Image (cartoon, rainbow, N blue to C red):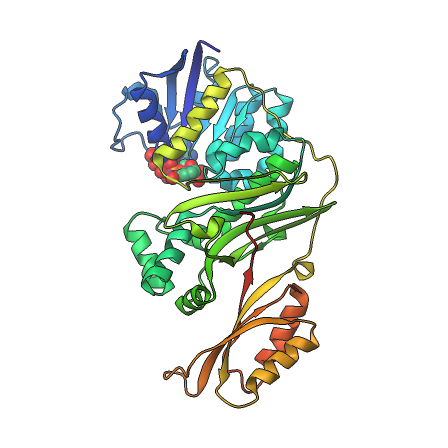
Length: 424
Ligand SMILES: NC(=O)c1ccc[n+]([C@@H]2O[C@H](COP(=O)([O-])OP(=O)(O)OC[C@H]3O[C@@H](n4cnc5c(N)ncnc54)[C@H](OP(=O)(O)O)[C@@H]3O)[C@@H](O)[C@H]2O)c1
């Protein structure tokens, strides 16, 4: 074990403060290793901080960290893509180890950053970029066996909103407001609720396990804005819960990657996650199945993940990162096969059900179950009709929905939510 780590920290916000607090609490010792806080870069030096530190420790110039030859390890917790990307790459070129929590950056520039770390024989710690699965991160990058299926609930805000919608029957915007008041989401919650935060974490995991980082614009990313309390309640009646899922599946050289709300059997695995809980389930190509549940965010869980990476550095652990061995191609969304939950808003007339199921049948889609509800008094004569389908191809389903939505008896755009099989 190294006796000393000389640390430069970029950022003293939620996570940076958590790291400093935990280090001070441990009297700057990680096992036998003494951690020396050399410099901390912030945006505003005069800002009031919740940790008291010698004034000369703070700088507003990240170069002070990069150029200090004493500093051997850099923690990046400023967030964002630029200048975080340039700072991390430069630190690696200067042969400093790097630990980062920045999933948004890793999802966009992970390949470049890992390559730089490998070329410079530096450790790159990314546990804090996805704390829902960080205890699996090392085994993912070590494992000789590829992932065959991965599903994850990676966003606490979304899981809280969906759980509350089900529990209280409240609509999306009411619960979102509550989540903001409780500090579960940023002022601008779009990264969380539009699925990007989940996609960032999924991409990083795929990079670690396959050496391949799909680009954000190459995968389906749907958030939870359009999930209605009606659908949450109907899903419950059918024995399901709606979760925002990160999904990846591999088959030979084909990779299926998507982020969207999905129905999961309510008594199984990830469906049972409540509130801000996160979790992951994965199966590898030889059938080994593992899963874990963890908080999705927060000052101390994230700071703890960072300290674990510091311990790895102190123990002289080397970075392992799988080079892309086989060329993977992303399966187009139209070609994926899954089951579907469909909700139609249709006139309460004889023959309507036959018209809808007829169109589905013409596209090779068979219906597993149907739930027809009473008339909605606010919408003259229209009733919700809910169907669960057997497995069908997405492109067939989309074509069928287009035709169904053109029927004069269908009063609103139909709702589609995919149904996913969990692993546990
Ligand atoms: N918060 C969480 O629970 C959590 C969980 C997992 C991962 N993460 C990731 O951790 C990273 C940090 O998140 P956070 O919540 O700690 O952010 P934050 O509270 O907004 O803190 C950001 C810090 O970075 C500093 N900073 C910003 N730009 C800078 C620059 N150009 N040069 C120097 N300092 C700069 C800010 O300085 P001032 O203080 O002077 O403004 C602030 O101290 C992000 O990548 C985030 O995605 C966060």
